[in-house]
Length: 156
Image (tube, rainbow, N blue to C red; front, side, top):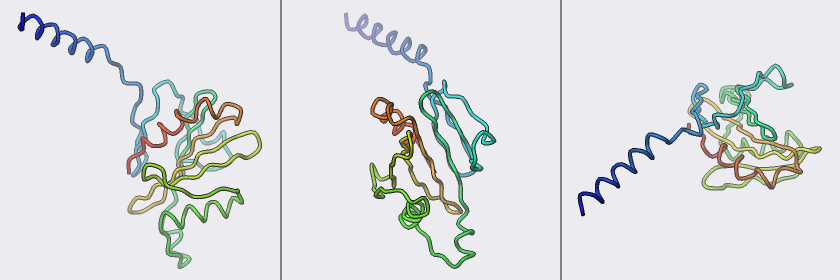
């Protein structure tokens, strides 16, 4: 009887492992990796006003990332850490929000026009990264967990 139970358990584990499909795929850009759902489409940054390092989308969510070299700030004599960088972004974009940490990730969110944005900040040895997810405000409550799951998958 124990052998039969053990055999059934092993078969179940094998079938589960064989049938499990990856729902996300890693995408690496310079010194940052993000796991994007496999059904998202990679878009060209030519479709956007800013020069972005990556853009993915699946209606109604879009995810993008922008890398800024630390040397840019150093050239102006600015000492910058991740918290200061976040506060600078908020001030430069004139948005009414607060920089916070969630699960150890510096982030802020805001609404502009009909869109809601969730912005996460990442630091590597040579750069600061802004990785954000956004969607129409009317859809935000339905997809905010999906956006956060993608944004929090970043590794640097």
